[in-house]
Length: 389
Image 1 (cartoon, rainbow, N blue to C red):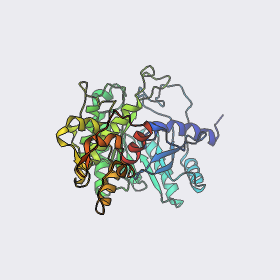
Image 2: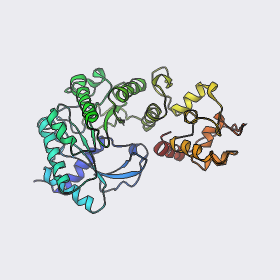
Image 3: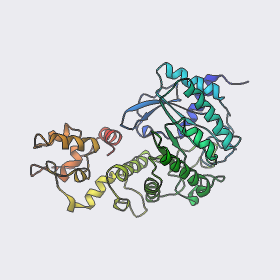
Image 4: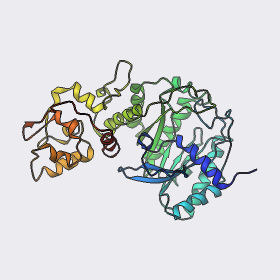
């Protein structure tokens, strides 16, 4: 018996959670709708939260990735949307005001071009119906150039998932895919396309973290190269989650804290002017979990501190633990009219004073912590999500 549209939507929406669109999973941002796993609250470009209609076109797949819930050999319910069904559902929820945009992905069946063509037809129906909002479309590995260009014309952002850092580790995740000739080459095509005709949201990729044995240093080294050479807009880090009835079901899940530290280090590379060689790793090549990477760097380089808040240039302010992009801009704006004299002035601007106080002076005065202070987890979350460190 064929399942109802509602049942298909619930199941294919739930399965789409493995494609990362933001950092929501790390801290469980609300509002998640308990009965609507296809509505995903993603962190937007400016820290705002937008609801995406996020679903797979199908979970039928020709590949046997060891970690994937949709792998060909796994016994599970197989479902597909026709382009018309999926487009109609999205437009219904958009008109109700429940979603602001679309994230469209798919498993690969019967082959990449056919699966991507169905996604393209879905997008075409939605655009022709008058929707002008945000669409993020996943490009499947092995898709031909002409089809990528067609999808790009209807999308604000494109992504193609590299999955891991190189061929050695990919062999531990997927027996069917080729890192260099298939995944990386596909991402290069997106990069070239985006430089020819820039997409509003650019291009992104995703790495599965914490199961193949890759180190944080290897992961961030790849990310750094992608930013510099392919002009990727974002690399997303998806912590491994074991799935029942897959070859890796017995492996432990990647900790959310490891994910968080990778994102924080990533922000340092993209937004804070840090170089890869400035990041501090332990002897195994991983970031320190107990401290954020900026704080680790600051402790390793006491010669750069203290920084005088009233006079330091932006680059030095951004190196201070507890000062993020937004609070840095606020400091620079406000100090044009008055001098900062007490820590409370900084706290009001969003600075995490418990982190910053050992690395700054205010009007020449040093305010070291009298005792070891612990930053509340809620503040770590807020700084991470909204200020990006």
